[in-house]
Length: 378
Image (cartoon, rainbow, N blue to C red):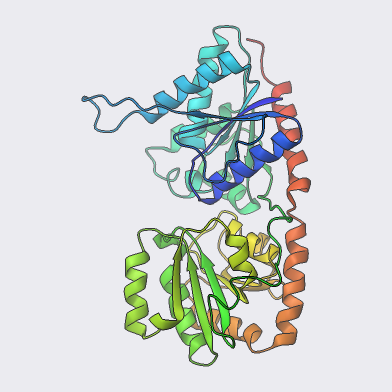
């Protein structure tokens, strides 16, 4: 198949999943064209079947903000015409699926058939989509797509609850490359990032309020009172200055490392003893899955799709959002018992194997074939 992948180019979960999926499809022989405002962060173009098309933004004085939706639509029309694209996989209902559907309408008038599969990742449903002003657009994008997937049962349930959906939604979970994400021993970060006798706790996110990084820090402060430990914070975002100040106020700054954005997160995870993810909401929890794949148990909130990834009492523990004492207690159960921690590490890796990319890719291929089978003639 010739597939166009439309996604955000960032380090966020949807961009990573879209990029890894496209590259995996190319390795299986499909021709994949990425269409985005800039080159996706993890995109490897050293493959003859992988192509990238940048959406050029024109700036008009009459618009305060450039109309990205229209620029994306025009680029999709151009790519489909000249590259023979059969299907567009849009990651996010708005603006990506909306642009794909508009491009399909334009191309249909020329007799060109184009399938559109939309994957819901979370924010388009749980945040933007709940705004009454956007609900009709999101519902339209879902209902007119030739196929719709969601990354968790939780997200599917939220979508059906908040939108007028007539189209069936298939749950295809996010996935992991188990060759890349695995525990690496010895790990060059083990002693470089912490003292020899310190337990290493890790959090990775984009430092938005919804990630509750301040909760991570408060949990760590309680743990540090009883256990020699350090906290490794990977990522960057609007909450970082406030979090740095909180570390100073709590007197733990010397044992907290802000590492910024990192490419080799699997190496940092390999150095970890425990992963903390107290998010207010997570449609899936890709960061938690990456930790599990590296043999690192997860203590997380039980919000959104996290219970579908992190098995309470097996691969880690689930707590209520903002339950700082409860999360600290759960973490210390593992950190104080090496035998229990070893059991959880083994279970974490076994759980991650359920989400192996080689198991998930065929599900998307079948979704594409099903969608193309139902595309009406131009």
